[in-house]
Length: 398
Image 1 (cartoon, helix red, strand yellow):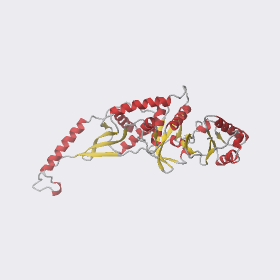
Image 2 (cartoon, one colour):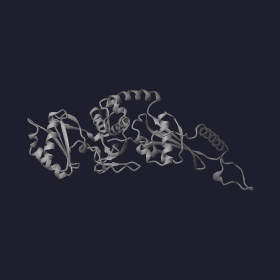
Image 3 (cartoon, rainbow, N blue to C red):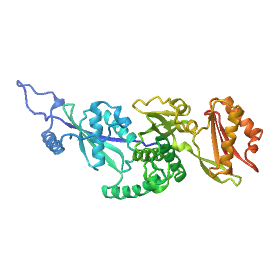
Image 4 (spheres, helix red, strand yellow):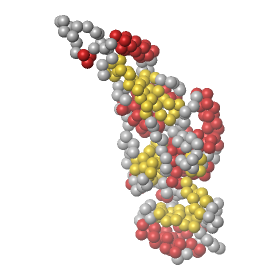
């Protein structure tokens, strides 16, 4: 999996004081600090030009925040929130350079990454540069310059195309949908309409999702944040590693509780009898806890993430597909789910158990002993997958 990488280019411009050439008490100055006249003149000229450049750059402006309530923004100090607002404002206005209220460059990259975590729709910016103005080794001013991937004109045209596709994405969501229904809908819609492709153009931003219909994990995570933001659902892009590779996924808030969701890993395929790849939606990573997430994901964020412990809006719990026993009642419920999937349009069903022993027992009963045929009349073949790490088994009817 791929994630957005920010490469920081920077320049440090020192406003050094010109040294005078002369003698003190009839003694020559040490040779190492005597400057040729031409060099002194050049230094003075450079200082004047840099001073003019600083004067031309407006002082850091006060920006009204539009980011209150966004997760990464709220982790920052009061001072860094001001810088966040100034940097975001510059990107939104497509400014070439803007002064920021910072005196140390190491804060800027962390703040920039907070912005990119909070806003999945910034498809026209991929990195930034900064300029640090110094005098006598002390920073007097810093400026922020976004690295744009396109002109403002092209950005506006692209945004209109994206807006058109977003309307199509949201068209099927029923009025009055709950937080859970909104998240499940977007999760499913992205998987059904967008394929995973490492070679997809613009795969680090939402252009690949809405206009190309092919992306990688960063594109899925960015689009998930962007779409849920349209629906009023707090959502953050989380980056780190999964099974040793770079990866991106989401943190979502449902009914006031935080959960993790990984759309990329919900985009699954199986091989049919003709060895064709058949895509299906897998819900293993829809609204999971921190404990479950950390079984194979490792976040690498500079700020603290919440401890997600709620399970009420986990897909399996919410949909009545979570079982803490394999007794007669549970077997009947699982059988009914299998029959519904077999006879309906869904074509697949997955169930989760509270332990690996229960998952093994259910698999033994329905699949190994083939009691699945008790509920699926005329069944000739079936595909299945068992995930003993998450205690889930998936059944797919071809």
